[in-house]
Length: 115
Image 1 (cartoon, rainbow, N blue to C red):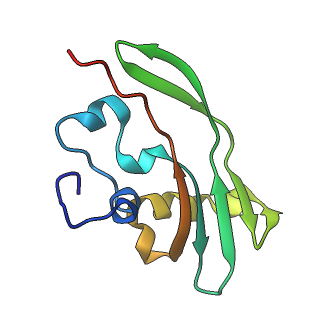
Image 2: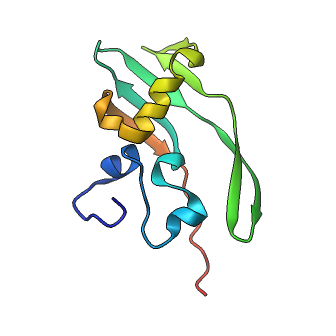
């Protein structure tokens, strides 16, 4: 997907997001950059996930983040994250198989200085 010109951003992120040219070594796969997403599931419910992260340190260009607990809302009301953690993981690996993702937010990174 990292080199396929016919795959859009949504398809890239929701199906693993494997980067070409070693970018994944530095920043991780595209699916690991997803910080929040909203999905309409088969019963028509809208489920929203947020996974806040805090930057911890950068070492030799590698940035690490601490993950805060996953937060979930179903139809606008808080829901138990433990009930939806499998869906969160599944959406970031084969997203279009589990519902219609209507929104996502991703972590962005500063462009590295040219060497």
